[in-house]
Every structure is written in C-alpha cells, then in structure tokens.
Amino acid sequence: MRAIQRRKDVVMSNEQPVESEQLERSLIEIAVESWRFSRLFARLVSRLDAGDSSRYVNQLRYFQKKLEESLEASGLRLVNVEGQPFDPGMAASALNIGDFGPDDVLLVEQMVEPIIMGPEGLRRQGTVMLGKAHA
Picture 1 (cartoon, one colour):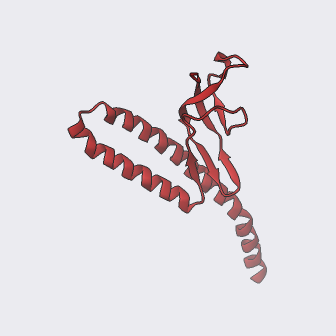
Picture 2 (cartoon, helix red, strand yellow):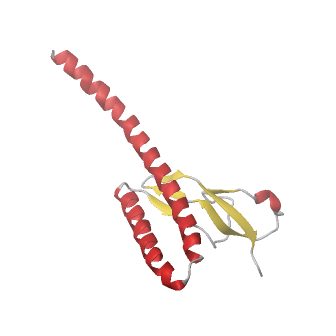
Picture 3 (cartoon, rainbow, N blue to C red):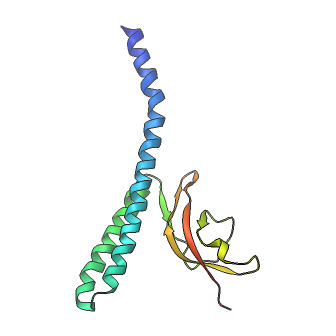
C-alpha cells in the first residue's frame, strides 16, 4: 500500500511543474486579452463627452489596477514601450519593420500586445507598430 502511495506522490510531484506552467500560460493569455480589451474600451470612452466618460474612465483605471495587482501576485508584470525608441534587441517584434530603411530612427508608436515579464525575465514577447522618429 505504501508503494502505491509513493508512486502517486512521485507522479503528483512530476505533474506539478507542468500544471504550474499551464496555469502561468493561461494567466498570461488572459492578461494579454484583458490588456487588449482595456485598450479598446479606452478608445471607445475617448469618444464620449466629458460628462459620460469620467465614470467609465474610473472603472477602466480600477480594472487595469486589479489586472496589474493580480499579475504581480503571480510574479508577472505588463511592460508597455509605446513612445520609446525601437531597439532590435527589444522584447517585442515589429509588425511593420519592413516599411523602414536601415538608417531610419524608429519609435514604438503602438503596442499591439504587451511584453510580459516574470521573476526569471521575459515570459512573453510583445508586438509593436513602429513609426519614424521626428527630428
């Protein structure tokens, strides 16, 4: 009977890292989709008049704060690099990099998907749209 229990313990301990990785992947997917949805919601709210928009803006801020707190509890964080100079070593792939020459100075105009960082470093690469830096 003890041998069976020990085998179960070994199987359970071997499955735990796989389950933990799957939970992290799921949390990251939910975080990315939540981030996208909050960006869409912000664009919609910006089209409302000031009287109507303030309530929704506050709800959006609360949602974003809760998202960040939940990720932080799991050791994850969203990274937004909009407005920063683009560096080919950046943890984000550029959808429109082919539109520019090798000597162009580029900025991240828009984050399509955020960068997700964890305690050990990069957990998910982001996606960006680039634009030329204005001199």
